[in-house]
Length: 95
Image 1: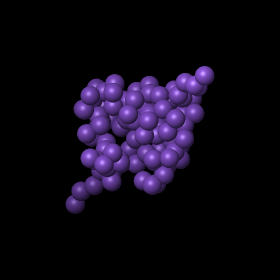
Image 2: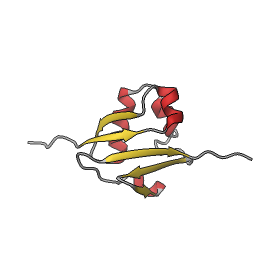
Image 3: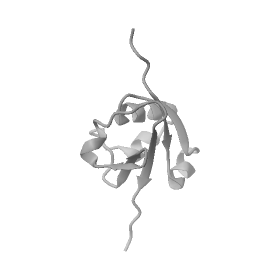
């Protein structure tokens, strides 16, 4: 019997909430990429805002799992458990 994937919550910053209409998404996945794919299926348009063509997070996106910031290279393999929280931050810069 295959164990069901963990249920996690994806939280988005207010700027993304304005675009996609929500700031919390209940997702499933054993890893961060799986959970993101689950969220993308629920919220059309979110994927193009967060990832590049290769499937990796855009360079200006910070992924935080349960309060711990992940390096870009850690995102692909970061394991999740039921109840985990993924927080997405977008860098804002200017000059």
